[in-house]
Length: 199
Image 1 (cartoon, rainbow, N blue to C red):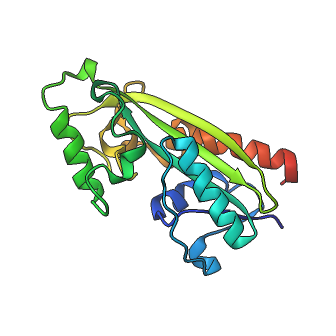
Image 2 (image 1 turned 60 degrees about the horizontal axis):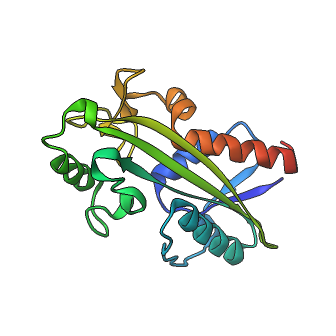
């Protein structure tokens, strides 16, 4: 059975990626389950760079095919902020609540029609023998005036999807996986892995 390492300690990402790959018979594992305790510095200036850095480091440490994602929120009115700094926007170790509050404070006088944003995700698949493949996805939306919903993490509660009249955090898992940036990138990664290794 193909074993894939999900190179993240973020439990929200573990749940989402686990759900997205659930219908394949591959065994998904995590650094914690493999006893891997490395600290990877995300020094890239792009989502592509950071995803590659993480995937390559964990593939070398585990000798397993490794999936790493780097994703974030880009807000048009803030010139693309928080971008690659999405996870650290309010400082290292800041809570999701603190990051959302900082974001909303910067948009306090911006009307809804000017709060355009997009979630972007890059998934890097790294192979122990070398080589990296990138799969990308994005999801457009608007930044809401206040958080709503509990099915999500990060900026999901303020990422409003006009076609659903709800935030990302108000969607069910199936809906979210179909339209989200991570869902689209993971779908492409899954298709690639199926073509290489089968189900």
